[in-house]
Image 1: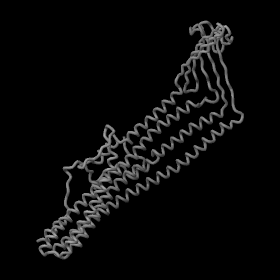
Image 2 (image 1 turned 90 degrees about the horizontal axis):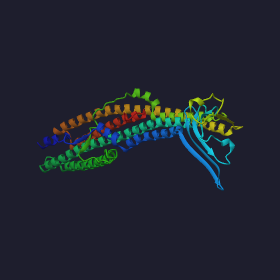
Image 3 (image 1 turned 45 degrees about the vertical axis):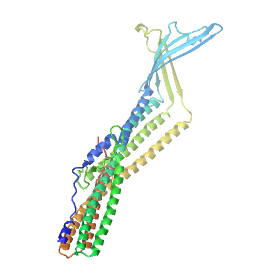
Image 4 (image 1 turned 135 degrees about the vertical axis):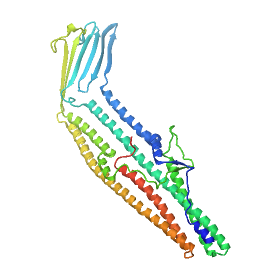
Length: 461
């Protein structure tokens, strides 16, 4: 009778957590994406690009100026020179300008003599050599535009890495929780068995050595349970680092919140073969492309510096802006001038261009290497994901087989053809296999996240 009762205790106890609150993976990831500081940093990163572009556009802001130079000595007004104007840079390299001169004085230079009401001038400055195709302002603007595009990609890179880290810690937390449940079942079973073996020994059904065997199993499984609880506590603390609320305050999980079952199937949104097409658009590779594009703008600007400085200035002069006084170009009431200059050897310009070309070559070689590394990394992660999936299938069958062996051993024990030692050995093997199965299930889900990260994917907008 006691043997039949003991056999019933070899079946694993079924635990339910219906009364517990489950933090499922999708809810957890939504929470991380919305409130985690790294996600906030990724969003703030866009502001760098916006402000850099704003600063570069400032190079084309109209400029209003006024200047005055006055001298009075021995009660005489030597001169009083005033000039107020506006200059407007344009994307075409032409600078528009307008000004008003109001000059007077006893000793005023004759070339500065203007009508009593002042002299208006309106004209433009044209670059015919350096600055015709590209200049410092236009180069800075284009590089700022590239930088703004790069901040968008950097943001995605931040989010991708956050997705991988958050996924890794969640499934480790989930597998540690399931392992705790397995060891709890094993421990409870060992305690019940020990009590029944001890009662059977008192009644003379079992020898004393069986009580020692049962007691050692209790101690061994208690140790395993405590180790699993330590691992689960650690993984819970690590998961807490990913949980923040809308007020940017960290959130700690309460004791009755647990993960979804790590053994539950999950949806594979991307086939491994299709991911290879994403490598060419990987954020790391795109950032290198932006570096190359920035250097290309710098190369064009440095090449433009090899041209001579050739600038032409023209100003139309008038006392008033009435239509009647408009005269043909270069016929009357005008002021113009030009500047032509170039270094004799251009060593500074040629050296600067050579450095930029060397940087471009260096960066292109770096891009080729990075593409190969990313492609090989993706192939490795695809292989890892597929192999772990195969291992999961193999070990699922192994657990089923060990369960059947335990059931068979219990049947033999029931009819007196087996021993408590053999049953315990079968049970220990099953517990170990179930723990391995939990860890494999977590590894496969983490491997999927690593595969997506290697392809340059992560949090989707």
